Image (cartoon, rainbow, N blue to C red; front, side, top):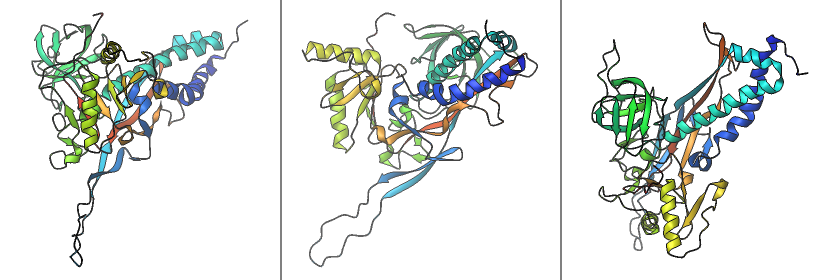
Length: 412
């Protein structure tokens, strides 16, 4: 006979499972796996002061070094150029709701209770991680793409994001800063990656609002992220094209804040080991030491095909550190893929100079002692995952962005 629970014990039992199992085990285990950046980059709280990441960047060396003759005056005293940076953290949330009926139904056995929590929270952590990971490749504005053209409720976009999935809500603004709302939050109805189109429920201004709707050249944002997103690789691996003021400092004033950008004047080309070795060589010339290149799965496919054609032995299923699938380029730099890497781009990184600074690891809100809170006027409870973090760079010169790359896709 299944174990019975007193109904008053159901909510405390769920809270106990959330605290003991999900906070201490499942969340951190799930969060740190599968996604390349989340697995490879250091994560920590040591740079956090309040709700800001505080750290020092070295922007120029001591330039006083010089040879002199006997009894000549010594070089003028010099010093390194150091700047303290204070970066606000970005606040991300996922809210999970449990109806009173579901909670009541789960009191038939401990197994059914755990199953309701497990099914919901496994997917919640995965969904949360997926959105955060996509924004780790952004430029800090929160913009996912620009509108190239609009036909009724169908938007043709400039580039693709894995966050373009039915059910998510988008909004738009005429500027990347997102200061003025143009298209009110509206749900994605369908997508067509081949045609680069996103169809939404309503691309016009909502009834009773002053919004004008999406227009050509507008920037598309996930609902609520305008001005609230974290920094990502597109902003870190940049020469000022996307982000002119980085971590509070002007890239035009400090050359060390500029990353290398390797393009092809807007003409797409196939990725190759030769292109990547040229990037690595140029970076090393400036004293940079890239240790990983992250691209897309189809770029990895093309590299593997090239190496097979050159009759070089490779293991297509080879794994790098932490079990991430990839291959070695040239004299040992790892190339791997991330499903959220923007199509047409790859990033050459020095991992030790980029980190995820977080006030605390992804966890549940429970400062009042309760993980579950009653939803007002509803027979339901909710639990909220939260993560306060930002991606910071201790240097940019030893990072690089490779662009104008073909995506030789199959299966669309």
